[in-house]
Length: 248
Length: 307
Image (cartoon, chains in turn yellow, brown):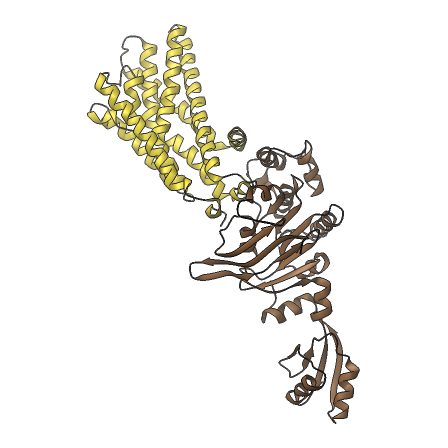
């Protein structure tokens, strides 16, 4: 059933302009990084530096908002468009639908990560500074893992606000603020615990603070956000039986 | 009775301290078209939602296909097609794409079920028009198409002709009638368009303020209640006493004008005339009358029309 639900969720995204917002935000992030690079001297290699800045900009400026907007919209629409009742009489449990939506959110973020990597490679080719395939593959994995970790960090917010008709916009704004707050914690202890920057320890050579304690703290933070996501799901959705679901 | 497809006993729904539905005993028989009649807010949709498990039951029980709803909901829902309130679909998808999602989630529909169900309701299968561009009538048709996509035994349709143009109303009426007559489907529908119900329903349940005031076959309803004798006579109180004592009239009503409506089917006008003439009471008028369903509905619910 879960496979069918995920397939259904992917079909529902057809012609959805909100998905384009995600790709546009990555393009915008790419443009911002290009502009920044003009003013920043290169580190070890120009391409690597560019990739790190692009990853950082995505993480703190664009992805949290984009993820929350897309995810919140996906959940909210079932209430707003009154489509939930069609699913409940199949019967499909709303909790299962929400799980499928979360899975599709991750798939979307992976797709966006791949799109970002393609942009990076294109930039390398155009600038004649393309790194070797091994390095590109590493960057790609980092981008995908980064997107997944940031989605995990923002997931509690998405689930919390998606449930209340139209309030996912507030969830998106809160997520954007959470992302931007990452700029201010980047040099402090909080970088390990912040929902967006926790993954930097593992994934960024420039912005991550590598230490054994750092790995433990960041690992714990990511697990904590997963647990928080599960808790919010249980509070907001799992106890909600079909009788009370939206269609009342 | 063993041919009951839907049966409720004392079905009650409270929202806080307010009873939206009170002690409803509903009986829908196999192959019939059962119409729930009531004003907006009377409790029709709430009853349907409880039947589908979309709304919890405060008191009472529901049996479907001879089994209790509790514990069998999943099985029942696979055998029921549903359209509740305004049809809700994904605005960014076409009719066929919307149905594909539902068919895929059901998992066991026929290969060409989408095409067939769209054709049945008069929507083109290949149409690239998005749901957001649909008229209310088209949305309503798509709602019905979604309800029949898995070839259910029972259809529960909430206001199925709402928003349709006259041709659409006629087509939908014929289509619902065909589903019942040709395919043996059992249909529970709600509507406030009484003229359509008169043309469509085999049985009628009249609901007002959450209470099922009357449930009977339409033919029986017509025979018993919608046909009556209207007697204009004075003094009404004396005549009523005589009718009760001599002719054992039980089911009657005095109108605002002082006329007497007699609904007892066994009473003949000649018996009344003979009785009153024998007592030297002058009869101003005596007529056999027929109520429309709307008149009857007003009489039953004690108020304005249904709209």
